[in-house]
Each structure stands twice: as structure tokens, then as C-alpha cells.
Length: 431
Image 1 (tube, rainbow, N blue to C red):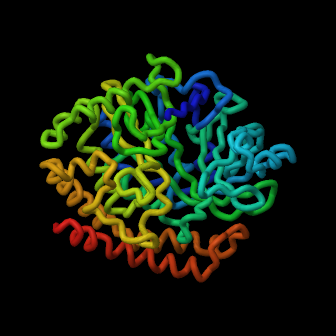
Image 2: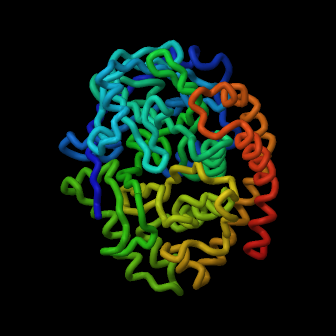
């Protein structure tokens, strides 16, 4: 099944310089991740059912190197305020399938910057919450007024973190992926209010879209597909996906480069898997992405999904080669649903085929490198620092679902998990 997204976005780009001062007085950084991602970019050279065509490739997206740094500064907790009229609130509070996909008008303030008219939509499946509970939201600045940008961005994604009682797992996991030189969202924690009422804290996560592609991949980026289910990548298989950034040369709703990947996977032999896949898949990044999922215990993603292979993006370049982008990492960094086993990739994925050949040796090499990076990050200290900053807000959060006892226990378990994970991985893989 193919579900096509057809967003329509402006190609105008400008940066609201006032935001940097409004959000943070100090320099913005993300430890080692920013420099690694910048180096990677140099070397590699949404939904809108009413729109008529998918967002075209990102070749025209000129992205300032500083775009989004103030919004996602890890040392800052931005304040995000929405003002919505009664009709908009009624739509966002409606569980009807059509209402959940409907964009409403709203007024947005982030720090000292205000936009009088932006698009707002509810999001989520198992994490779906409707006001007056804490919702996850998508906000399109240029939905109704084309060309509006916030620190160079035209879209915000806010996650309610109801699956993560620590309120840290998602942003910590993305931090690890980026530190490993992989394309992944930037993120921090934000305070959300709606019509003057506090909705507590949310994860402020960079949206994978056209501008994300241009930032992470440079001028070689072309397409982006959100994979809802399926990691076998076979023609006629179980892969369901949404077209987020379409091939500008393809017919609307089609994905010819993705189809070529599927055909290549079908023709590949296990004994020569890496060589056979290389024309359509950045095999080094594919293995590194899988290693990062193993190290972070991402049990709701591509390689080790406990409920199937999903929650990731495939980004295609001008040569038709793909790389993976992680998504929905809120269930990572935890053994609450059992210990994620790095030696047992999901049987339906191409990574499971990798285990049957010399490809697995290449994978183990990437796991070793991932562990080296992981251990260099001092994640326990980082988690303590970020926890200390958000802890008063968590305790005061009027929309918080887990009680404080669960929050405290989960946070203590997170610190222990981060410290123990490298030894667990080495034991699982015999490293």
C-alpha cells in the first residue's frame, strides 16, 4: 500500500534573527554531534490531503548553516504558545479520522517572535492525545501565509512524550545518532501553552522534510519517504510508505527510485549482499544506522522493531541511493519491554539477510565504531544535566500522565541503562 503525502510549501527562506536573542543569550551547540554532522554534510556535497502534489525535491532549498540552531539549542527550553479559537480547539479535540488530518488556523509565539496565522494539526497513533490532554502537534508556519519562517524553519513538530516517562529518551537517542555522523533530527525540550493554559513540556523535534534534507544531505538530496511498515524492501511486499518529498521528475504519487531499490534487493544474493545493494543503498550508512539502533536499544524502529519494522525514513539522492533517518525514538534507552538484542535483527529486514554472509562482519565493525562513539559521549553525565534542567517542569506539569513515582523510577533506570548498554551489546555480539 502506498499513501502519498502532498504538502505544498513556499520556497522562500529567511531567518528571524530576533529569535536567537529571544531564546538564548549564549552560543548554541550540541556537543560533538554538530561538528560531525556538518562535516558529513560537506562530504556528501507533513501531510496535506487537500494539496495537489507532493513537495518536490530539495535542490532549490538553500539552507543557512545556522538555520534552526536557536530553536533546537540543547541548552535552552523554548516557550511555545498557541492561541486557537473555539472552532480550532473543537477540531483538535475531535477523534474523528478526518478531524485528525485537518489543519486549523492558530497564532504562534516562540520566545519573543509571534506569527498571527499558522497551520496546526494533531498527530499520533498510540500516543494520540486530544485536548484537554496533552497533544502531539505539527505546526506549519507557511501553511496559510507563505514564506513565514522561524529561525529558517517552516515547520515544527511537538511530541507529548507519553510513552517516555523520563522525558529524555527521544532527544538523547537523536543526539547519539547525530554524534555517529548519521542524519537525525535535532531536538530539545519545550514548554507548551494553549490559550494561556499550561500543557507542560513536550519534545521539540526537527521535522524531516525538504529543509531537513538540504541541511543533512546538501545538494545531492532528492526524495524522502516515511516508512510506516516494512523492512524487507521487496516488490509487492509489506512496505507501506508516505511520499514526503517527491521525485520532481516522477508522476504524482509514484516513487520510482524506491521501486528500483526494491528490485535491487530482490535480485541481490546473500553472499554478495553489500556489493549488490550498493548502487541503490548507502550500505555503510545502512549498517551504521542499524548499529545505532542496536546501541540505543531502539525497539520501535527499522532493525529491531518489537512490533515490526517501521518508524524511519528513507532519503534518496540524485543517484537513486538511499540512506535511513530515525524517527519516533521515544521507546529507546529502556528495557521496559525486554532487552533489545543486537544479535537478533528483525527477521523481515534486509539486515537479517546480512547476518547470513560476510556482510555481518561489516556490521560488527560498525557496531564497534558505534560503541566507541557512544562511550565518548558520557551520556550518563549528559542525561543528568538535561534531567536536572527539566525536572522542576516535569514535576509541575499539569498534563503529565505517569505519576512522580514512575517518573523517578524510570529516570533512575535510564541512568543505569546508559551506563550498562555497551557491556550488554558486547556480550550479545561476542565482541
